[in-house]
Length: 282
Image (cartoon, rainbow, N blue to C red; front, side, top):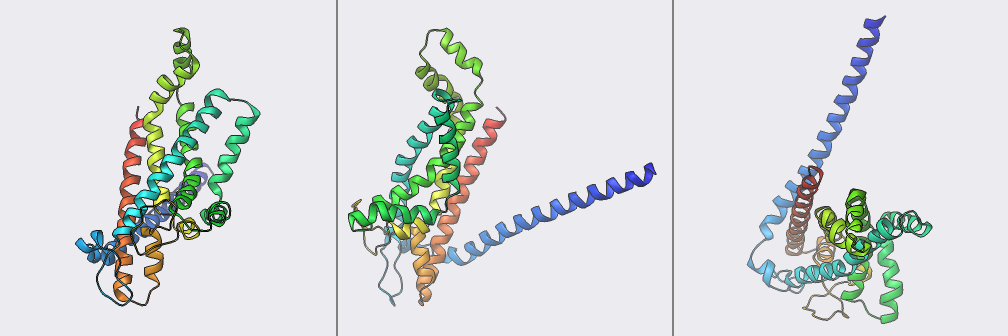
């Protein structure tokens, strides 16, 4: 009887391990297939014109997406400048100053809900409250939409990192006569800074791949734009537009832009994982 039960347990254990290994291998294969396909199709589009020239009119060969690359950089940076402080400060309040209060619980619940809202809904919201009143698509509207996406991501990571800081460090700072805001700034945030930076990089990687919110906010433009109040091209929207075009040259550029987006997100993700591993290992 005991031998039969042992064989049954080992069989079940083997089945579960085999199934887990199989599905893990499938996930890795899918990622590798995507990277390989994007690299194979997109590497050929990478050249000098791709980075430094504007798009050509429909039907003409050549050109690049210099304005779209610049637009992606500008919108991502502005979104980061808006979303990072809000995410960090809200996490500091809920963890340090409002810990255990009803408002902090509502704040934590709200950020969790916000993180699950589809990005296209956020884009539609910004379209209604920013684009429609301004009567124009704009760079700023796109940055606001992406910043909303970053807030819950950064809030969650910052909150978790601050909770990992031992209370004994806070108590030691207070025992020296330091005010609590200084303790939070000089001790808590300093101890959690690597983890917070990891969350920031992960949030930037997330918004770097967003397209749906930008269709409702910054839209697109075939020209250079240095105004925050006018439409601006981005690499993501360019992929969306060019991939559906009937021109082979445009579709090739779309693959090239896809390759750049994938590579940048992959590098940011790897770097953030390295930082997270450093935090985890102390």
